[in-house]
Image (tube, rainbow, N blue to C red; front, side, top):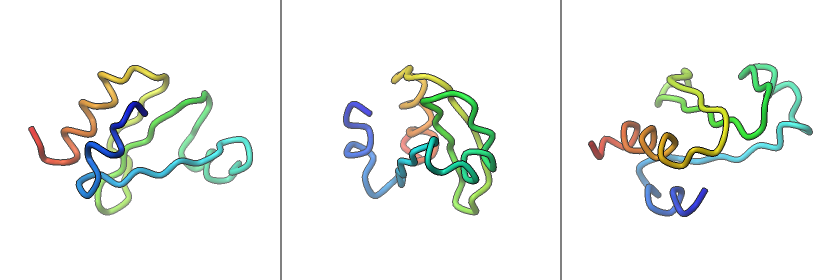
Length: 69
């Protein structure tokens, strides 16, 4: 993800999941297209979802979640 994981390390936790092999998890989060980025709050509730690789939109979510705004 172009260094976003490293840039926000310690502020935002990032997990990568293979949607093809993790069918149940993909189904739980309603993943229909790859890549899909699901953003969760500290309780595990979904707060946003982005389909695609628009790094600018993804970083905006990282900033909001990290409290760096």
